[in-house]
Amino acid sequence: MQSQKYTLLSFFLAIGFCLIAFPAHATVTSVAPVPSSKNIAVSQSASFQVTWYVRRSNASGVGVQVTSLSGQFRGNGDPDNPLQNVFLVLSQTKPITGISTSFKFSENVRLSAQLIQNAKASGFSFITYRRWFDDGGGGNFASVTFRITGSSATGFTVSRQAMRFDDNSIVKLLNEKDALKAKADVNYNGSGQLEAFWEVAGPSTAGGVPIFRTLRSVRKYLMSGGDKTTLVSPLLPSTTAGAYMVRMRITSPVPGFESPIIRYFVGSKGAQIAPPLPMRVGSPVDRVWFNENTRFKWEAVKGAAHYRLEIYNKPQETDIASALPNLGDDQTSKKPIRLQGGPVAGMMLSSDTLQTALSASVQSHLLGGRWYYWRIVAIGKGGKIVGLSPIREMRMP
Image (cartoon, rainbow, N blue to C red; front, top):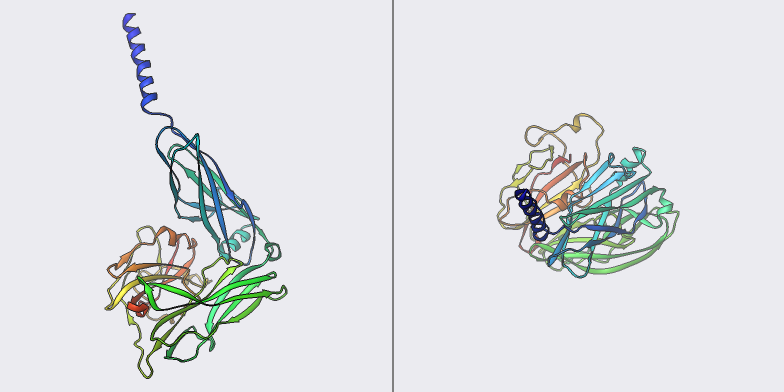
């Protein structure tokens, strides 16, 4: 009997020690997105700035980290209808103060026109974007609802933008002081004031990253009933030899895509402009089906200060044969590929980097089941393109 008392006493002391040494974990108690809902049109892409307000109850300790590893688009909010994953990590660490701690996360949520069209074709009337936030002890989730409506219900929106020079080309070779202008073709719905900036990046760069400067601001009221307008840039600079990029960056209404970019090259009067060198790519092979082990590898180019991996949309194909992967090397017999618009995703890499995997942020811009073009660009000092790889294709899972 005495032995049983000591045994019970030891048991309760052990429990008490555990409670003291290992306090209960706290948890994320609430998540609230702003806005919580928006209208989207079935025929166009959309982009929204979403702010996630997260509250977490406090326990002992000096600091706390709250993290959301990814987001997911779902048809009609049903977990059995996943449409697309977004592998973008949101994370913050704060000191503990009071009985709870508040966090604020900002995210640019993008819905491509293809994603919306696929959801509509599947019979869904709305799409939810869901995120789970966790502090390691417990979590909570919230969703933003995007209602699929007609274009009139979405208000004034921009659905497409294409860039070209005044002779309709998308690449130009100039002599110094030659005159050149660019044009932007903009498709829109509804009516409202379009606000944008004509910008150009010249030979000067910061670590290989182009530095855009403003040439002119744009403010134009677009009337309903029309669906397309063309805007013309001021004269583009051409007094210094080198590579240039030009874009018209729309700031209102905020489009659901990156501003497309076109390039021109200025050489000294009478001098020949050296074309970019052809680059050799080791992997992946053409028409690869992307997976977590896919790595992009290429050979070094003389004079390269940086490399840029560029990924472009590919028009959808309807024939069955075109959907099959290539098990060999590049298809030398296929027709030359002409890239349309600017890259939809990409990575800037240092000159000593000759291979890379796709980052999570790049993957978040690519739709599952879609084919994409990709290439490697070698950039020399001053921003000049000194090498270009062949254009290859890949399919996202």
